[in-house]
Image (cartoon, rainbow, N blue to C red; front, side, top):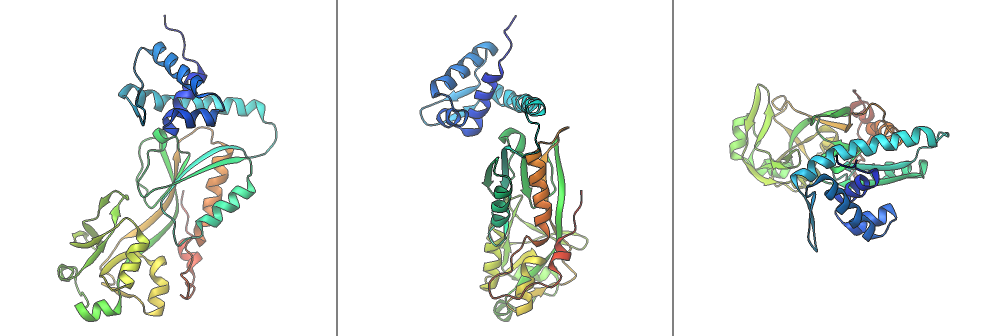
Length: 317
């Protein structure tokens, strides 16, 4: 009969996977690096399988390691909640909080994070910025902010805002290339394209009656670069109304194909489904919900959008 796996071994394994380094895992746990190595070796010996492939420069999970890591996170979370239920009798919000967000240039997200950190000084906050959809459960993340409501199994999404997307171009571009009247006219235009889920270049735009194939002249997963490119006259971009409204008000951009484009952007907070949500996760979700109505900061020199908070502030569960 095999000896049962110890929690300290699972913790060493999980921290090593998430930190991608024995030294960083040891530092986070406050133990010598040799202790981490010893616990990992003991864990592999107990299970009779190789969990990690270690070289001098990298760590890689084996198939068995990936399977164990998914279950280890559940076990460690349960242990953490069990300890918290009896050890903490006050109302303080504390503990680690790992968050994944898309690049938030042009928003007041940084101010919201700083305000949260000041309000909850006992929360150890990790904020990871990426254009890709991370695997929350495998990556050990508590919360992700996404411009999409697409979900993997075991996740919950709470919609923060929704906003129509508009096709826009600069007056200089339209003067040089003409104004498209139908979707077929786009074949003769330079289209500025984003990335679906931050991973794959877009090939279609949403039109009434379905999607339409569009040839792109520039592709980027940076929505603010798309806006800059449109302002510079490089082509037609599909952007959220809340982002381009100040430029439409000043005439720096022109709305083209009104009524033909029928698409929306959705901003949602995503988190793993749990019976008991840790207090720091609940506090952060509440902070996001409060922040969402004013998430876009008007660009310098542009007029403040009218009724912006009302337009962006619709929330859904």
